[in-house]
Amino acid sequence: MRIAIAGGSGTVGRHVVAAARRRGHEPVVLSRGNGVDVVQGRGIDAAIAGADAVIDVVNATTLSTRRAVAFFETASRNLLDAEARAGTPHHVALSIVGIDDIDTSYYAGKLAQERAVRASGVPHTIARVGQFHEFAEQIAAQTTIGPVTLAPTTLTRPVAAREVGEHLVRIAEGAPAGRVADLVGPRDEVLADMIRRMYRHDGIRRAVVQVRFPGAYGRGLASGELRGDVSRTTATTTFEQWLAADHVRSSHR
Ligand SMILES: NC(=O)c1ccc[n+]([C@@H]2O[C@H](COP(=O)([O-])OP(=O)(O)OC[C@H]3O[C@@H](n4cnc5c(N)ncnc54)[C@H](OP(=O)(O)O)[C@@H]3O)[C@@H](O)[C@H]2O)c1
Picture (spheres, rainbow, N blue to C red):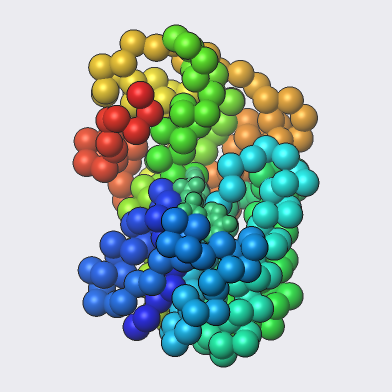
């Protein structure tokens, strides 16, 4: 299959591309680095021409509700409009488990993305997954000030991005299914502990201070809702296994 991967150069996107290759497909990466801008609508038609499926894993790092909604709505609509013109048979959208009652900040963008997909008329599958193990690296990179990392109080059920990549390609190989079962990791984790264990693993001496983020967003992170619902599929890689096998030490230094 020819599979177009929007965001194929990102944290999970690289794993989607690798999984597609392993499974004998032809991946095509859409990213600004490859001359395609899904927000500006530049280069999408040419990039998805002849694709059997489009997997959307683009991302913007923002906690602003307005910016998150604008980014995910615009990116999704531009991709879906192009897919409708091209007659693409399957759009696969990656979303996040447990966000229904956290319609604010970044998660408002993801809920807007899901609505845009459902309203598009394009045959689709929405796959919700837990936070990635890589989330520990991503948050540490954003919240480290000198010798201290401020970790938002977050209870989660994280999954390796590698397993998410495999999951998304398998979904793209099948028929559009609407919403599929959530994919989460094998254990509950507290984000601050994940970052501490990552630092210990890497020999980094840095304090990690857990901070309760304000408002509905902070409540949502701390509530445990981000562990997803009960009718879910469980991935196998634990955070420790991920640290030993997938984690690249230099990424958060
Ligand atoms: N991080 C988590 O724990 C987690 C958990 C569950 C689900 N997710 C979802 O997974 C998805 C990917 O997240 P990630 O952390 O892998 O993202 P990421 O590492 O930030 O990568 C983002 C990707 O999007 C591309 N991109 C950004 N703006 C673009 C634009 N205007 N046009 C074209 N491409 C653009 C980037 O490439 P260029 O910069 O070259 O454009 C890059 O390939 C998101 O939808 C996120 O909500 C994340």
